Image 1 (tube, one colour):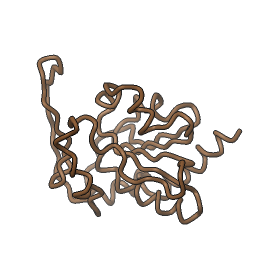
Image 2: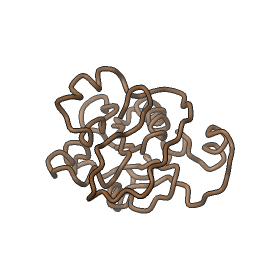
Image 3: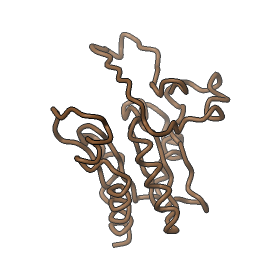
Image 4: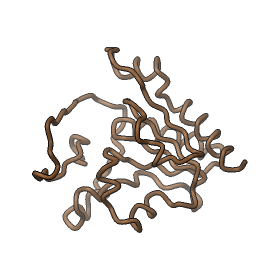
Length: 179
């Protein structure tokens, strides 16, 4: 991620078979990427950077909230609410599932500990593919349609991409694990 633009960058190779690269610029309420996150940027390959955005207070998280990029601010707000209720929550940014799955298993387990089954993904796009990340106990908040046009705040509220909905999904996911 670029701290200035929030854009994920990765060198493209012929094997990537890129047909289109689409970029968007929209101002979001807060930038979760801090300069400290980029301190060892040179030492890390781009595809292993910035998955862990906010750690759960008090150790192992009860739930992991996963945003795909612009949705990270929703996950961070939901984390704040959950933490206030005494529910430890981790926030992970996962702008590309394919890049995540290219990482070795040890690294993936560090980002998404297998012991933490309660997971919620937030995707301002279709939810296809998220089941492999959130698992059977997890929840996916997504849009399964296209065509609406307005400021992101209005669209997110209208279609339920809100911190409140993420908190509700997190509670359900935790309850699903406890069954």
